[in-house]
Image 1 (spheres, rainbow, N blue to C red):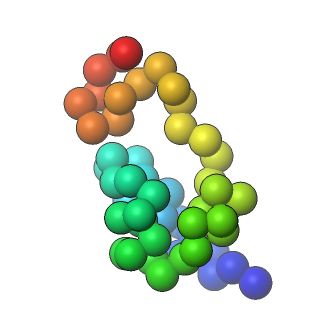
Image 2 (cartoon, rainbow, N blue to C red; image 1 turned 90 degrees about the vertical axis):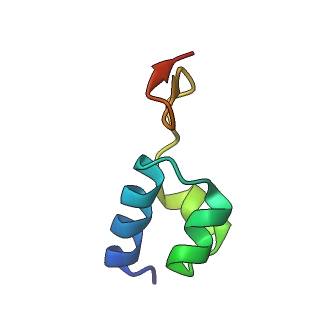
Length: 53
């Protein structure tokens, strides 16, 4: 079972622009768990610069 608090933290970290390897290091969640539970990022927005690509 996945800890809901860890998933919430992972979503926050991702929204701040972190990559999946960075998120896995910060949350101790496996990449497959993150891909399964987090919705995909929008491909039209670069979250690190907040610019539309």
